[in-house]
Length: 202
Image (cartoon, rainbow, N blue to C red; front, side, top):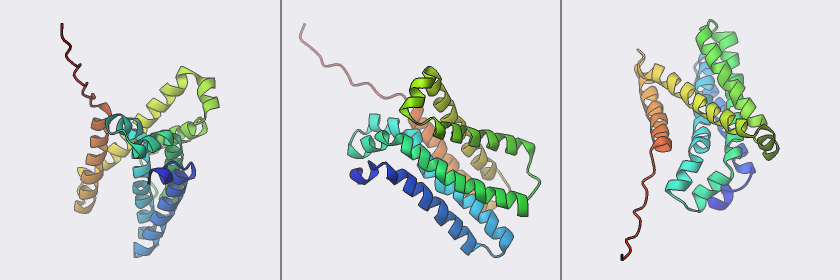
């Protein structure tokens, strides 16, 4: 497992496969064209979430549970971010078709909030190299830190809206995925317990 996860191509392959499978599942499950487009848009967003969580938690996981698998995830954290960007590009296409053709009239708030998230996704993807890290200096860390927390916020706000909505089916989805995102943030921010210093004879 660790050897496969340590391949540079593995996160990109997973992002591509997850996005395409989500589109295929939506097209097969929908009853008509509008429902198929809506399901493809929703399910591609969910398909990219695990890849985002790996990038979001990679350093936390290796600090708390060091081992071959977590070290492989950390070494390829940039690739997991790129895999998420690829999966979310598929989501963007599916969402664009759904919004433009079948469900126009989105609020400006959602358009601006989601648009900024996509701008950050692609800006982070374009700067995910050592050369850009050296060129940007401290701003590289600030950009990627702000970007990953903002993407987390957009995901969480989206699922929170479903959790407190009127549709029972969407409410369950919102509660499940919203809880996962909040738990991920808590794990990332929770201070690691320091080991007690060994006692020495005085």
